[in-house]
Image 1: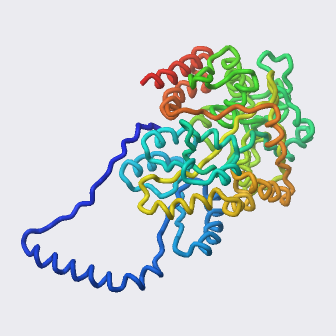
Image 2 (image 1 turned 90 degrees about the vertical axis):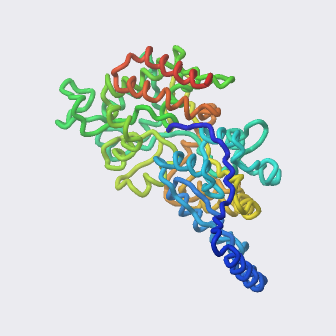
Image 3 (image 1 turned 60 degrees about the vertical axis):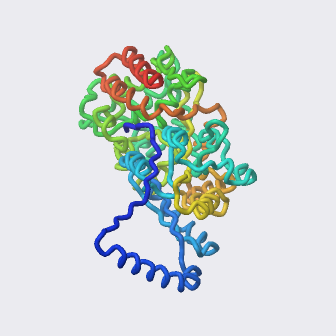
Length: 457
């Protein structure tokens, strides 16, 4: 996504006055206004202000709809309209709408996009607008992620815990493995302490039924994948870097993933696809971010590394027995990336008071519990998180691996106002690395250089 710095345009309302008959037009307008004013006392009591809320997640949107029914019962003067814009179009449309003055009153932002809007004055200052007591109940990691220059620029909505591994219990059984066999897998770029690849070889098949540990295995003709790999910042790259002792960005915000440990981490992922052939080709995953998830749901992938953001998708889409296992551990341990989503207030809203009341509701336990009880996502309001855990417990799904992994430490999501431009610069270069068309060491260094070059602009 190309992201340009926002410029806040203030559009004056335009009136067209036709010279011929202008006096008559003015008289008509005066008469209409007088008539409206005579009825204003009666109408005001019945009128509602519509506050629009935009997001990209259908399942959370459904939870919001139920939440706002409860909100409107105690706020009868407000009607909340939920808008869903698909992820693929979301940020381009948001950029255009904010610049043109047509954005929703409340809209979701991710960690990479919010700084530009905050710096442009497009967002409400949440630190000054919502009580400190309410803010104390929000997930600290998300508060930190969306705080810039000492100001919080959104109401935390989702707080993804860690990354874990969904498994297809039937495919495990066919390979002679049990869920217990994959609960403590390790990966090692040197190969000395690697148990992940041997397990994945047992779980990968070609169209002749040969597993990847067989001499007859054809890695160019797969019918079943062992695992997902590829360029996926949250589910794969951040975790592999951190679990090998590498960092994505340094304390100053410079991109630092081309260290020796970082290059080895990317190389391991690339080998899963191009050397061991236990994961889908980058020709598929580079162009379709949902390819691996879809293969898992179709019963064609044994292990699918992802986050709680896919729990509801797996629950509703998988027609086989499945469960969740701990993230594979690297040389530095099993260290997961974490991320959060915020609901930002539009500073240009025509009804700021009503918008603020909606934001307060979204940041409350009562408002956020609907997200948790639906099982659609992990709420960023701490008191609403038990409802999320209870939902999945009622579904007989143990989600503890997503939380247990946090004990070893976490890797922060990409940060800084320059992240969208940096991602646009590095992504094509890393795509070539994962395709195997560029050497890993040269390609990763080039990607880091391209990302850092955007920071100097």
